[in-house]
Amino acid sequence: MSDRISIEVAYATPEKQSIIDVNIDHDCTVEQAILQSGILGMYPEIDLKENKVGIWNRAAKLSDQLREADRIEIYRPLIADPKEVRKRRAEKAKLEGRADKVTGGRVKTG
Image (cartoon, rainbow, N blue to C red; front, top):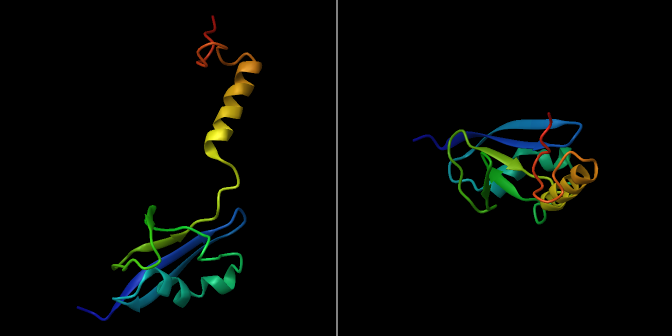
């Protein structure tokens, strides 16, 4: 088995996306790989104490071990609660007559 593996570190803002290929030691953790990638220098707003991370869209811990071809994703904090956004959108649809005021379902046309 080789002492090195290839992984990717990904981060995106609304304006820019970066995916960095990194060759790391096979026993490297998520946090070590992020530090070695140099992505923290490109995006100073990343705070590993605050930002959640994942491997291929599954939540991960900074201490998790990596495997060949893993992609570490660094997530930005949510700016709005998804449940609250859906609730407001449903209320707006009711007020505009696009949703039934009792059931919340779509208004039947024709």
